[in-house]
Image (cartoon, rainbow, N blue to C red; front, side, top):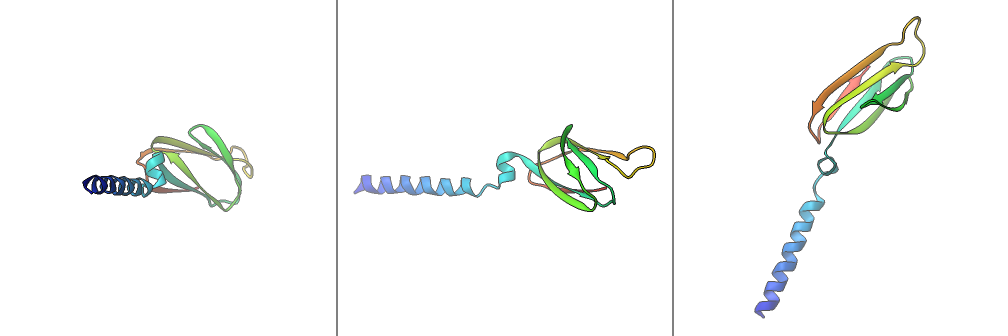
Length: 105
């Protein structure tokens, strides 16, 4: 009987620990933060995150990326609709995981 109680205790302890791991948010497990980019202009822009091309953001559009926590950089370069030189904006900072940020250009 004593061995049965000990075995049951170990099983319940294991189940309890498994539930705690399942409730850890993905952003904590992956060590990422969320960044929403909004193109509020009438022109398309190329979006780069950490020097890698991500996509063309059409006019009046929004997109969200999960970015590794820590230092990051983003650049948006106007693709068309300019007269002489395209608008080129660079953003950078250091952020912790499981946080949300917004950039509107």
